[in-house]
Structures are given as C-alpha cells and as structure tokens.
Length: 250
Image 1 (cartoon, helix red, strand yellow):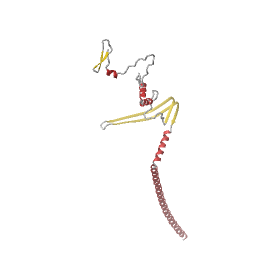
Image 2 (image 1 turned 180 degrees about the vertical axis):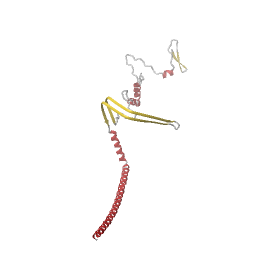
Image 3 (image 1 turned 90 degrees about the vertical axis):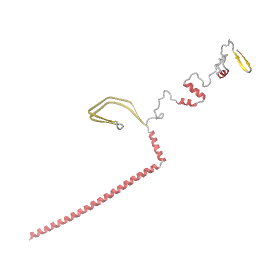
Image 4 (image 1 turned 30 degrees about the horizontal axis):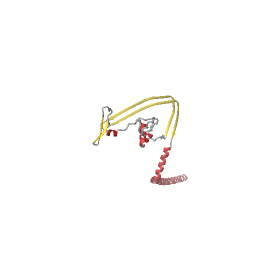
C-alpha cells in the first residue's frame, strides 16, 4: 500500500497483500483511539474520573459526584437504610405518644362466664327505591350473668407525656396575648350574666316582701275579726249571766 498525490487529491492504493481494510479519513477522525499496552513495565493508566466498568448504584452516585451533581449524592445520603423502620404517615421522626400503656406481662388462670335466660331478636329492613335505606335492629334480653376471673397476674406501665398539653396551653396564652379583644368579649358576657342574676334576685326579694306584707295584713285582719268576735261573745255571756242572776234574786 502506497500513497501519492494527483492533481492535489490524496490517493491511497492497496496492494493484494494488504489484508486490513483502510478506514475512511472521516471515520478515522471520529473513532476514539484505542488504549495502547504499556511498555517497559509502566503501570497501566487509571480510568478517567466518572468512568466505571460496573453499572451499580455506587458507581452511578460516584460518577455523578465526580461530574459535580450534588443532588444525587444528597438523595443517596437521605435514603433510609434497610434496617431502619418506616415511620407512620403523619408522624414526625422520633415522635412518641402522649399516653402509652405497656403491659409486658398478663396471665389469667381461669375465666368463668355464666349466662342465663339470654334472648336476642334481630330485625332487618332494606329499601331500594329511595336510593337505599337499611335499618338493622337488635333486641337482647339478658336475665343473669356471672363472670368470675381468678389467678390474674399483670404488670403494666402507664406513661403520660404532657409536652403537647403544655404546648397547647402556651398557644392559647399566646393567642390571648395577641388578641386581647377575646378577653373583653368574655368579660362582657360575664358582666351581663351577673347583671341578670342581680336583677332576678332583686325581683325575687321584692315579690317575697310583697307576699309577706299581704300575709301580715291578712293575719291582722283575721286577728281583729277574732278579737271582735271574742268581745261580742264575752259581752253576750256577761249579759246572760246578769239576767240569770237577777232572775234568781227575784
């Protein structure tokens, strides 16, 4: 194979012994150069940053980190590990319950339940025309029930946290501090209630005094009538006694 130039054009001639195909100049420019084997015991060149043979997640994250993409690295750091339990929806990480009852030990030897005269009537009514109406009722009559439990052994622990209660109180006080008109409205309502109570008490005392005066007046009238009747009766009796004494003397 030999090259020569004709009329300004580059011509390449192939011989019969040239087995390797000649690449097009444009393809030769675009094709990447193959790495050459190291000579004289020199160490092999290391791969360029971001180039890895495997395609696992670690290689992808490392490649993104080498390329300057911090979002992938942050997402990898914030991802939960396999041994971390998932938090329930709506609960903050590490948030505990306000009231927690722990019963680590509970043993019951015997439970005796006796029921006498148990009658149950169940009624069911369903309608479909007016969309749907479903009525279910149960009438249960129980005569006598005896429940006996023996050999109970229990161990319980009740934990109550008042952090949220204190937070609610602080929020209420903060709201009252920022909105003093709420206290004015409350005081106005209390004042109206006290005024109504005072008016009712005065009215009750007035009615009580009026009733007492009427009762005393009625008692006085009755007493006067009684005294008048007694005086009339006494006068009649004296007159009768005088008449009887005069008749006896005659």
